[in-house]
Length: 278
Image (tube, rainbow, N blue to C red):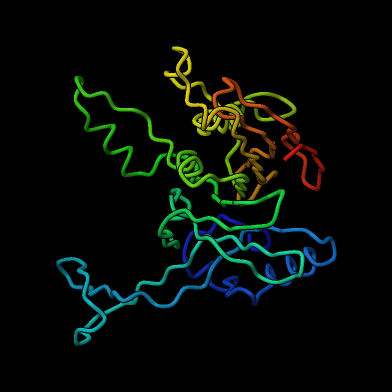
Protein backbone atom coordinates (compact mmCIF):
# COMPACT_ATOMS: atom_id res chain seq x y z
CA UNK A 1 0.00 0.00 0.00
CA UNK A 2 2.51 2.48 -1.31
CA UNK A 3 0.61 5.74 -0.87
CA UNK A 4 -1.83 5.10 1.98
CA UNK A 5 0.45 3.38 4.48
CA UNK A 6 -0.50 0.14 6.21
CA UNK A 7 -1.22 0.69 9.90
CA UNK A 8 -4.90 1.57 10.32
CA UNK A 9 -6.91 0.94 13.50
CA UNK A 10 -10.28 0.71 11.69
CA UNK A 11 -12.05 0.65 8.36
CA UNK A 12 -13.17 4.25 8.89
CA UNK A 13 -9.56 5.46 9.16
CA UNK A 14 -8.63 3.68 5.90
CA UNK A 15 -11.78 4.48 3.92
CA UNK A 16 -10.61 7.85 2.48
CA UNK A 17 -7.70 6.05 0.75
CA UNK A 18 -9.62 3.22 -0.94
CA UNK A 19 -9.07 2.74 -4.68
CA UNK A 20 -10.78 0.94 -7.56
CA UNK A 21 -8.22 0.13 -10.31
CA UNK A 22 -7.56 1.34 -12.90
CA UNK A 23 -8.64 4.52 -11.09
CA UNK A 24 -6.84 5.95 -8.08
CA UNK A 25 -3.39 7.35 -7.28
CA UNK A 26 -1.64 3.96 -7.19
CA UNK A 27 -2.93 2.99 -10.63
CA UNK A 28 -2.13 6.42 -12.07
CA UNK A 29 1.44 6.22 -10.74
CA UNK A 30 2.03 2.64 -11.92
CA UNK A 31 0.52 3.32 -15.35
CA UNK A 32 2.77 6.33 -15.96
CA UNK A 33 5.88 4.62 -14.59
CA UNK A 34 5.44 1.35 -16.50
CA UNK A 35 4.79 3.19 -19.78
CA UNK A 36 7.71 5.56 -19.31
CA UNK A 37 10.19 2.79 -18.45
CA UNK A 38 8.71 0.11 -20.71
CA UNK A 39 8.43 -2.42 -17.89
CA UNK A 40 5.98 -4.20 -15.60
CA UNK A 41 5.15 -2.57 -12.27
CA UNK A 42 3.63 -4.17 -9.15
CA UNK A 43 2.43 -2.05 -6.22
CA UNK A 44 0.21 -2.46 -3.19
CA UNK A 45 -2.98 -0.46 -2.65
CA UNK A 46 -6.09 -0.49 -0.42
CA UNK A 47 -8.94 -1.99 -2.46
CA UNK A 48 -12.48 -0.66 -2.37
CA UNK A 49 -14.91 -3.59 -2.13
CA UNK A 50 -18.59 -3.85 -2.88
CA UNK A 51 -20.78 -4.21 0.25
CA UNK A 52 -20.81 -7.77 1.54
CA UNK A 53 -23.95 -9.87 1.38
CA UNK A 54 -24.03 -10.08 5.14
CA UNK A 55 -25.18 -7.76 7.92
CA UNK A 56 -24.71 -7.78 11.66
CA UNK A 57 -27.78 -7.52 13.88
CA UNK A 58 -26.85 -6.01 17.22
CA UNK A 59 -28.95 -6.81 20.32
CA UNK A 60 -28.46 -6.72 24.08
CA UNK A 61 -27.56 -10.40 24.13
CA UNK A 62 -24.91 -10.10 21.43
CA UNK A 63 -24.45 -9.84 17.66
CA UNK A 64 -25.67 -12.26 15.00
CA UNK A 65 -25.20 -12.50 11.25
CA UNK A 66 -28.20 -12.12 8.94
CA UNK A 67 -28.43 -12.47 5.16
CA UNK A 68 -28.79 -9.27 3.18
CA UNK A 69 -31.78 -10.79 1.38
CA UNK A 70 -33.70 -11.13 4.65
CA UNK A 71 -35.92 -8.34 6.00
CA UNK A 72 -33.74 -5.77 7.71
CA UNK A 73 -34.10 -6.22 11.48
CA UNK A 74 -33.82 -3.43 13.99
CA UNK A 75 -30.33 -2.26 15.00
CA UNK A 76 -28.47 -3.53 11.92
CA UNK A 77 -25.00 -2.39 10.93
CA UNK A 78 -23.31 -3.18 7.63
CA UNK A 79 -19.99 -5.02 7.56
CA UNK A 80 -17.52 -2.66 5.94
CA UNK A 81 -14.25 -4.14 4.78
CA UNK A 82 -11.52 -3.37 2.25
CA UNK A 83 -8.92 -5.46 0.48
CA UNK A 84 -5.16 -5.44 0.89
CA UNK A 85 -4.40 -5.61 -2.81
CA UNK A 86 -1.73 -5.28 -5.47
CA UNK A 87 -1.94 -4.04 -9.06
CA UNK A 88 0.12 -5.21 -12.03
CA UNK A 89 0.63 -2.79 -14.92
CA UNK A 90 2.28 -3.57 -18.25
CA UNK A 91 4.73 -1.67 -20.50
CA UNK A 92 1.80 -0.12 -22.39
CA UNK A 93 0.63 1.55 -19.19
CA UNK A 94 -2.49 -0.64 -18.97
CA UNK A 95 -3.72 -2.70 -16.04
CA UNK A 96 -2.85 -6.39 -16.46
CA UNK A 97 -4.60 -7.56 -13.31
CA UNK A 98 -4.99 -7.35 -9.55
CA UNK A 99 -4.47 -9.65 -6.58
CA UNK A 100 -5.89 -9.53 -3.05
CA UNK A 101 -3.95 -10.77 -0.02
CA UNK A 102 -5.02 -14.28 1.01
CA UNK A 103 -3.50 -14.69 4.50
CA UNK A 104 -4.39 -11.78 6.77
CA UNK A 105 -2.05 -10.48 9.46
CA UNK A 106 -3.43 -9.13 12.76
CA UNK A 107 -2.99 -5.56 11.48
CA UNK A 108 -5.35 -6.37 8.57
CA UNK A 109 -8.16 -7.76 10.71
CA UNK A 110 -9.89 -4.46 11.68
CA UNK A 111 -10.53 -3.58 8.04
CA UNK A 112 -9.59 -6.30 5.55
CA UNK A 113 -11.36 -9.11 3.75
CA UNK A 114 -9.14 -11.96 2.57
CA UNK A 115 -8.77 -12.86 -1.07
CA UNK A 116 -9.87 -16.18 -2.51
CA UNK A 117 -6.43 -17.62 -3.24
CA UNK A 118 -3.23 -17.20 -5.22
CA UNK A 119 -3.26 -16.58 -8.97
CA UNK A 120 -0.84 -16.24 -11.88
CA UNK A 121 -0.38 -13.91 -14.84
CA UNK A 122 1.01 -15.01 -18.22
CA UNK A 123 3.62 -12.47 -19.34
CA UNK A 124 6.15 -12.45 -22.21
CA UNK A 125 9.70 -13.73 -21.61
CA UNK A 126 11.77 -13.35 -19.56
CA UNK A 127 9.17 -12.95 -16.77
CA UNK A 128 6.81 -15.60 -18.21
CA UNK A 129 4.40 -16.97 -15.58
CA UNK A 130 4.25 -14.47 -12.70
CA UNK A 131 2.59 -14.79 -9.30
CA UNK A 132 2.04 -12.14 -6.64
CA UNK A 133 1.94 -12.69 -2.89
CA UNK A 134 1.53 -10.02 -0.22
CA UNK A 135 3.54 -10.14 3.03
CA UNK A 136 1.67 -12.59 5.31
CA UNK A 137 1.01 -14.80 2.29
CA UNK A 138 4.51 -16.14 2.94
CA UNK A 139 3.34 -17.53 6.29
CA UNK A 140 1.21 -20.64 6.70
CA UNK A 141 -2.52 -20.06 6.43
CA UNK A 142 -4.03 -19.59 9.91
CA UNK A 143 -6.04 -22.80 9.37
CA UNK A 144 -2.72 -24.63 8.98
CA UNK A 145 -1.56 -23.32 12.35
CA UNK A 146 -4.71 -24.77 13.91
CA UNK A 147 -4.01 -28.14 12.29
CA UNK A 148 -0.47 -28.15 13.69
CA UNK A 149 -1.68 -27.27 17.19
CA UNK A 150 -4.28 -30.04 17.19
CA UNK A 151 -1.96 -32.72 15.81
CA UNK A 152 -1.23 -35.79 17.95
CA UNK A 153 2.30 -36.71 18.92
CA UNK A 154 2.08 -39.75 16.64
CA UNK A 155 1.04 -37.63 13.65
CA UNK A 156 3.66 -36.62 11.11
CA UNK A 157 2.67 -33.00 10.48
CA UNK A 158 4.80 -31.15 7.96
CA UNK A 159 5.02 -27.37 8.05
CA UNK A 160 2.90 -26.04 5.18
CA UNK A 161 4.53 -23.87 2.51
CA UNK A 162 1.41 -22.84 0.59
CA UNK A 163 2.85 -20.01 -1.51
CA UNK A 164 6.04 -21.84 -2.48
CA UNK A 165 4.12 -25.03 -3.26
CA UNK A 166 1.64 -23.05 -5.36
CA UNK A 167 4.59 -21.76 -7.38
CA UNK A 168 5.81 -25.32 -7.96
CA UNK A 169 2.37 -26.65 -8.89
CA UNK A 170 1.70 -23.79 -11.31
CA UNK A 171 5.20 -23.62 -12.78
CA UNK A 172 5.73 -20.02 -11.69
CA UNK A 173 8.84 -18.35 -13.15
CA UNK A 174 8.66 -15.02 -11.28
CA UNK A 175 7.26 -14.35 -7.80
CA UNK A 176 6.79 -10.77 -6.59
CA UNK A 177 5.98 -10.11 -2.92
CA UNK A 178 5.29 -6.54 -1.71
CA UNK A 179 5.58 -6.46 2.09
CA UNK A 180 5.21 -4.44 5.25
CA UNK A 181 7.23 -6.94 7.32
CA UNK A 182 8.10 -5.94 10.86
CA UNK A 183 11.67 -5.51 12.06
CA UNK A 184 13.09 -8.57 13.85
CA UNK A 185 15.82 -6.48 15.56
CA UNK A 186 18.41 -8.99 14.30
CA UNK A 187 21.49 -7.97 12.35
CA UNK A 188 22.89 -4.49 11.74
CA UNK A 189 22.90 -3.16 8.16
CA UNK A 190 20.15 -5.54 7.04
CA UNK A 191 17.58 -7.56 8.96
CA UNK A 192 19.21 -10.98 8.91
CA UNK A 193 16.41 -12.60 10.94
CA UNK A 194 13.76 -11.50 8.47
CA UNK A 195 15.74 -12.45 5.34
CA UNK A 196 16.55 -15.88 6.80
CA UNK A 197 12.87 -16.41 7.54
CA UNK A 198 11.87 -15.46 3.99
CA UNK A 199 14.37 -18.00 2.67
CA UNK A 200 12.95 -20.62 5.03
CA UNK A 201 9.37 -19.99 3.90
CA UNK A 202 10.44 -20.41 0.25
CA UNK A 203 12.31 -23.61 1.05
CA UNK A 204 10.46 -25.90 -1.41
CA UNK A 205 11.81 -23.74 -4.25
CA UNK A 206 15.45 -24.49 -3.37
CA UNK A 207 15.82 -27.34 -0.86
CA UNK A 208 16.95 -30.82 -1.81
CA UNK A 209 14.18 -33.37 -1.87
CA UNK A 210 14.60 -36.58 0.11
CA UNK A 211 14.53 -38.61 -3.09
CA UNK A 212 17.28 -36.45 -4.55
CA UNK A 213 19.45 -36.93 -1.46
CA UNK A 214 19.05 -40.68 -1.95
CA UNK A 215 20.17 -40.42 -5.56
CA UNK A 216 16.76 -40.73 -7.22
CA UNK A 217 15.83 -37.08 -7.79
CA UNK A 218 13.14 -36.10 -10.26
CA UNK A 219 14.87 -34.92 -13.41
CA UNK A 220 11.81 -32.89 -14.34
CA UNK A 221 12.07 -30.57 -11.32
CA UNK A 222 15.82 -30.33 -10.71
CA UNK A 223 17.30 -27.14 -12.16
CA UNK A 224 13.97 -25.33 -12.46
CA UNK A 225 14.46 -21.70 -11.39
CA UNK A 226 12.16 -19.12 -9.86
CA UNK A 227 13.06 -15.45 -9.59
CA UNK A 228 11.75 -13.96 -6.32
CA UNK A 229 11.49 -10.22 -5.66
CA UNK A 230 10.51 -9.23 -2.10
CA UNK A 231 9.87 -5.48 -1.74
CA UNK A 232 9.64 -4.56 1.92
CA UNK A 233 8.90 -1.28 3.67
CA UNK A 234 11.56 0.57 5.63
CA UNK A 235 11.19 3.08 8.44
CA UNK A 236 8.33 3.70 10.87
CA UNK A 237 4.56 4.21 10.72
CA UNK A 238 2.47 5.01 13.82
CA UNK A 239 5.17 3.57 16.07
CA UNK A 240 5.63 0.39 14.03
CA UNK A 241 9.12 -0.32 12.69
CA UNK A 242 9.52 -2.22 9.42
CA UNK A 243 12.44 -4.43 8.43
CA UNK A 244 13.39 -2.95 5.06
CA UNK A 245 15.98 -5.38 3.63
CA UNK A 246 14.18 -5.84 0.28
CA UNK A 247 15.62 -8.96 -1.31
CA UNK A 248 16.04 -10.47 -4.77
CA UNK A 249 16.60 -14.23 -5.02
CA UNK A 250 17.14 -16.70 -7.83
CA UNK A 251 15.98 -20.01 -6.42
CA UNK A 252 16.85 -23.29 -8.12
CA UNK A 253 14.95 -26.46 -7.33
CA UNK A 254 17.00 -29.12 -5.50
CA UNK A 255 20.06 -26.84 -5.29
CA UNK A 256 20.20 -27.17 -1.51
CA UNK A 257 20.66 -23.45 -0.81
CA UNK A 258 18.93 -20.15 -1.56
CA UNK A 259 20.78 -17.84 -3.94
CA UNK A 260 20.52 -14.21 -2.82
CA UNK A 261 21.14 -11.91 -5.78
CA UNK A 262 20.99 -8.78 -3.62
CA UNK A 263 19.67 -7.34 -0.37
CA UNK A 264 18.95 -3.70 0.39
CA UNK A 265 19.84 -2.30 3.79
CA UNK A 266 17.39 -2.11 6.68
CA UNK A 267 17.03 1.68 6.40
CA UNK A 268 17.21 1.95 2.60
CA UNK A 269 14.13 3.70 1.26
CA UNK A 270 14.43 4.10 -2.49
CA UNK A 271 15.29 2.27 -5.71
CA UNK A 272 17.99 -0.30 -6.33
CA UNK A 273 18.79 -2.25 -9.50
CA UNK A 274 19.74 -5.93 -9.32
CA UNK A 275 20.59 -8.04 -12.39
CA UNK A 276 20.07 -11.76 -12.94
CA UNK A 277 19.79 -14.23 -15.79
CA UNK A 278 16.22 -15.41 -16.40
